[in-house]
Image (cartoon, rainbow, N blue to C red; front, side):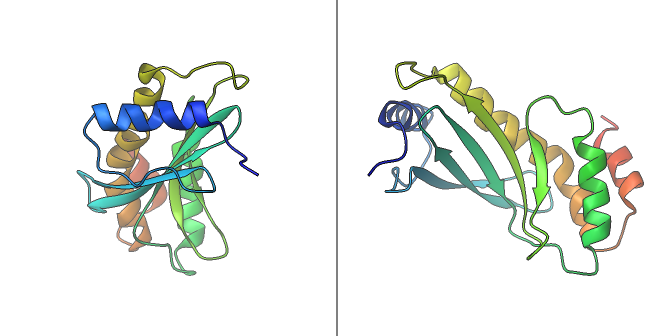
Length: 157
């Protein structure tokens, strides 16, 4: 049984085609995948668009995980970064150190069609946050900066 909205999936795929993205079509789990080049030290991320019955979420999965030693500092950085965010958040899997940024959109029931403007905002906001906070986050992961200093760098512009 399909556990995601075909209307939302179609709208997202149409947006990605029109915006000239190279992506894998929605799979049996309601996930669209593609990669993106970033303007930060991470250089790229894997994007997963997870579609549900009443909405979707965009996950930018970073290519480097936080090792066990740096996880407390990475969590401190994430907590400081997330404070005050309105749409989206960084998150880290404490089991393996995977770090990602998530944005999501509720689209109501299956009768509501999500607009290309909403899709664009959800994807591009996600990518801009990863680019803005990516290099300072990498420095925290490598032990080159303390979380508080890294946030100051990210938010200096």
